[in-house]
Image (cartoon, rainbow, N blue to C red; front, side):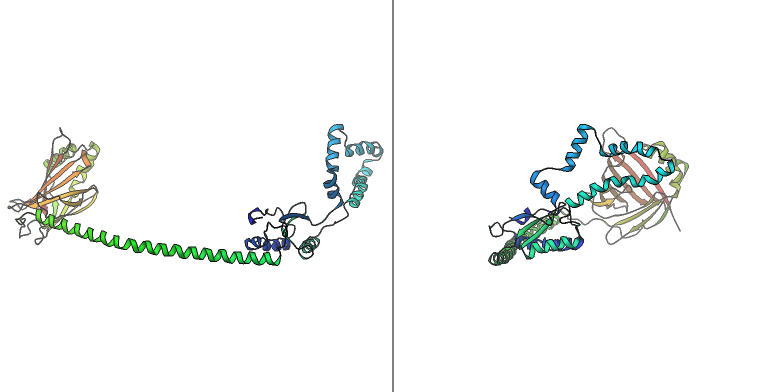
Length: 391
């Protein structure tokens, strides 16, 4: 019988006994003691004690408790009610104080029943933990059984101890199984190492292919690059700190610009009240031709670098004031005007932003911005930002 067929213990009568049986129920001992041979005998039941009433009940199938319940159900008679009716006329003649004194002694009519029950159940009782442990010890020592579990009816699931030869075979079988598992683990490790060795050349070939593709991309990009060098001004006219120059005419123009971007009127009113706090800081890098622009207003800061890419390039990634990543193209005109495009924005219905930055004849920093909607039928939105230099 396999170890999985051993029934779980339902109830342990004493904690020392539970600890002893828990030791016996370890998986290794179950494997050693389990056997299907006639010598071992398999799983059996043994009783620790054999009181008379359970023995008679097991032989005849007769139960006094069941008989009493059946007669009471069929006849409606109750021994307690009968005794109560019998004693009631006898006790009624006594005063209340005397009846209160005698009341506890009325249970004496149970004494004969308890006496008979003690005689019938005497064998094996009273049951103590010492008797249970002694009975289990006799099973192990005298009858050579191994207790597995104890049921609530004091029956024990036991197994016959295997012979010395069978026990030795079991121990050897455990060792063989362990060696077999170790060999299987070694084979798996070798197969994994072999697979890794086979993958290594493929990884090298893939890496070489990727390097060749990158080199080819660089060569193609160089071939597509314009033959002429992009124009870069050698003076930093646009470098400085600037404050927005606000006039009533500008606010009117700014409101119309926001309305063209489909902004609600409440947003337009708030923007017109805060636009006077707008500032910009610009830094022209002569060597690279890049222009850094940092815009500040109550909404927050917008810092972007417009790298010199050329008008026909694919552009570079730049984050907009609305935290959207778009492609940016920028270049310088011969008249020191900086041009830039922010392509394919999703805001305001989708479209492109173009800007021209320069210094006018009065020394103001000008930024002409235009929104080019991608949807046909919509008109462009234009605004001219005018900044004065902060000393």
